[in-house]
Image (cartoon, rainbow, N blue to C red; front, side, top):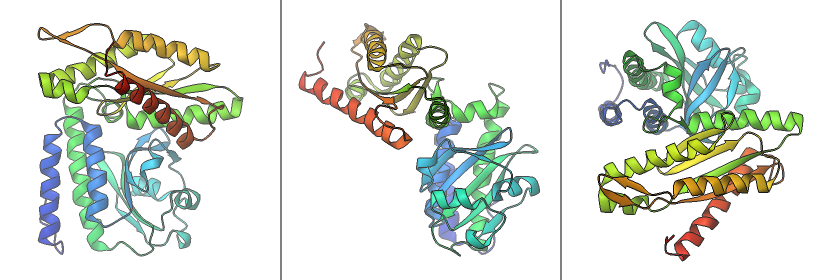
Length: 338
């Protein structure tokens, strides 16, 4: 990475170096690297949001997001008639400081997110443009030439991580960006992508589906008692056990830490989801040993049903989480004994 950028303050350059150090600490976890860079890019440019859009066929997918863009994680936009699409085609950074006066941008999408100015810069991996890094502001005329130079440095950090990810030969770039490096299951980005798609499909066809929110109980105690290697092993074991209970059409994702989400692609009623939750719970609580230590595994599990519990993504997620936390409170009242 070239840090010889004129007109950038030493404080900014030091921050970029600190970000580079933090990226190294993430290892080969490309998803976590993209999350880190979007958050720090937003901060370093004093913006309201940032995101990484990765190319999938003719669409761009919000694969990492922070600030005002965060709730749109998984959003898909057509590359045509967009600033991002033009950025990819021309392979240069582009700036729009007033979206209402800029015919290059997708005004409808910008208004939906609540932005009035933005910068996009191509993410070039090898010789291919694989997406864009975008920074967003609710203010007009927020960005300047220094912002573009900063964004160039940040995009270089992501591009280097992408190159390292695919140079291992383990899997393609998009798979690395959408799957959890520890458990191998899909990550938060792919979960929201699939959820948005299932929501649109169910709305059009009048179908029903379910969302399950699962949170491990007692992970901190496992880490404190047996060490973080045991905690990681417990997370992977829970992922393995839950995955066995699901159908191929379902989506099972690690949302972060000890939190998991499941999209039950077809769920006719509450009893069907409750029966699935009982099967999941039965698998999770089976005996587990790590390096000759017996570790109790347990999870709090809640759900929401489309369309009985809501028809909007945020409402369904909130109700599934609320349901899960009610179970967690009940478990704490029982002292986590089986």
